[in-house]
Length: 355
Ligand SMILES: NC(=O)c1ccc[n+]([C@@H]2O[C@H](COP(=O)([O-])OP(=O)(O)OC[C@H]3O[C@@H](n4cnc5c(N)ncnc54)[C@H](O)[C@@H]3O)[C@@H](O)[C@H]2O)c1
Picture 1 (cartoon, rainbow, N blue to C red):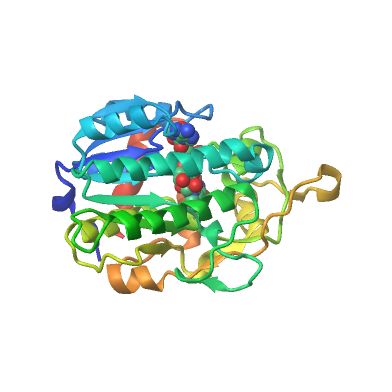
Picture 2: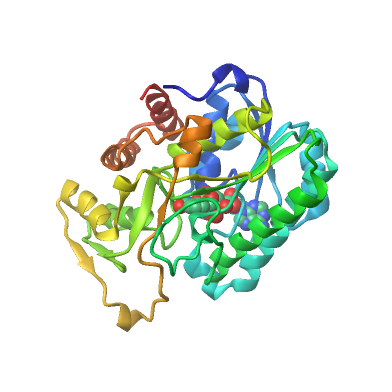
C-alpha cells in the first residue's frame, strides 16, 4: 500500500531545517521527487564528506540558506519569505557523546533553536503544518519496556534531556497558543536509530563501520549488546510525510500530537548483530573494544518503540525488513564508487515507494 500521496506534494512549498544533514538531505531528495518546492535552512554540513555536497542538494532545492536556528530574526525572515505552508524541523545537535562534551551548545541548539522555530510558526500563520523531530531517547530508558507515545519522558544525557525539553516546549506552545480552532497543526515525532547511505556522523554505528571497511580494517565496536530500534532513513521520513498530509487535510484529531515512527520489534537487534552483517559481507571480523580503557560514558542497553499508533491512525507501517535495509546500505555504499549519489538516493526512494 502506498500511503504517500504524490498529488498532495506536487508544488507544495516546504521549509526544512537541517537540510545539510543526513536525514534532512534524504528528506529534500524525497520531497523533490514528489514535486515539492523546498527551502532548506541549516548550518553548513558538519561532516566531510557530506550527503549535502555529494548529492548536490543545493541544486535540487528551491533555496538553500546557510543559517543558525539560534538566530531568531534570520530564521523568522527565511520562513516568512519562503511562503511555505509545511515545515519540518530536523536541525539539531544530534549526538549523545558530543552532548556530554558540549552540553551548553547542545541545549542552546536544541532547546533555544526549537523555541525560535515555535515562535516563528506562531507568528507566521501561512505555516499550516509543522513536524518537529525529537527522538526515541526521550523515554525513561531505566524502564525496560516497549515505549508508547504517552509514556513518561526522561532524559539523562544532555542530548536526550534537550529533546525532552523540546517535547515540553511543544506541549506548552500547543496548549497556550494553538487552540482547537487554529488553522495551524503541529506534531512531534520520535524515530528509532536511523540508518542509511550518506550518514557520515562521528560516533554512529553505520558511519563508523564504513570508515573501517573503506580502510579495509576489521570493525571495532563499543557496545556489542546494546539493542537499538534500527530503521532505514526512508521509514521515518515516509512517516513524517504521511503525518503531514493527514494533519494538513485535517484527517486526524489535533491534540496529543506525538508519534512514534519506530521499526517493528523484529528490527530491534544488537550492535553486534548489525556489525556482523557488514563484517560477513566484506569478509572482515568484529572486534569488541575494552570500554574500561577508554572511559566511555554509558549508553542505554535496550531501546524499543511501539509504533501501533502510527499504524492504526495513519496507515503507515515499516516496509523494509532489517536485512533489506542493511543490504540497501551495502549496495548504496558499493555503488557510490561508480554512480551518482543523487541518482542512488532517488533509486532507493523509488524502490521504497513500490514496496
Ligand atoms: N539519525 C538518527 O538516528 C536520529 C534518531 C532520532 C532522532 N534524530 C533526529 O533527527 C534530526 C536529524 O538528525 P541527523 O541524523 O540528520 O543529524 P545530522 O547531524 O546529520 O544533521 C543535523 C543538521 O542540523 C543542522 N544544525 C545543527 N546545528 C544547527 C544550528 N544551530 N542551526 C541550524 N542548523 C543546525 C546541521 O547543519 C545539519 O544540517 C535531529 O533532530 C536528530 O536529533 C536522528
